[in-house]
Amino acid sequence: MNRQQRRQMVKHLQSRGVKRADAEGFVTTYNSRNTDITDGAKVRINVVRIKKNGGWDELNPHYKEFVLANKNTLFTAIKDEHTFVLEEDTTEPRWKFIAADLDLIEAAPVEVHPAGGGGDGEDKPIEG
Image: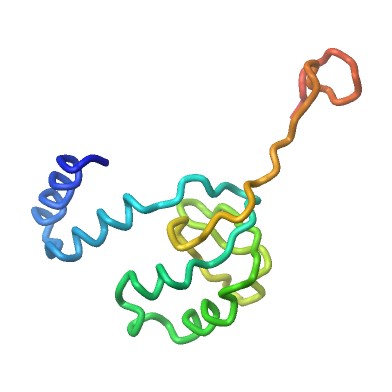
């Protein structure tokens, strides 16, 4: 999103009743999202970003405890609509994260098929 688009988005959000500071925060978060994270990617929680983003003091104490306790833990990201859950998260329900709050450590493996697609050396389409 370029500068003009950011300004237009802030104005649009303000016209809908959103405070200017909140609108600018949303646009900043939107621009910083990590679109490289996909289902199955290895990630770590970006504790610095979560704490810096504002509102840390108002967050759920159990969420803050989870984030701090797992700042160096390697997780597998699982896509959940527009957010991610962490496969190794054993809390119920699992905590949800936006991509911007996760650091990509290793991209998800990509399944590669031979030219025929069947995986058995025969020239046939992949079924499924």
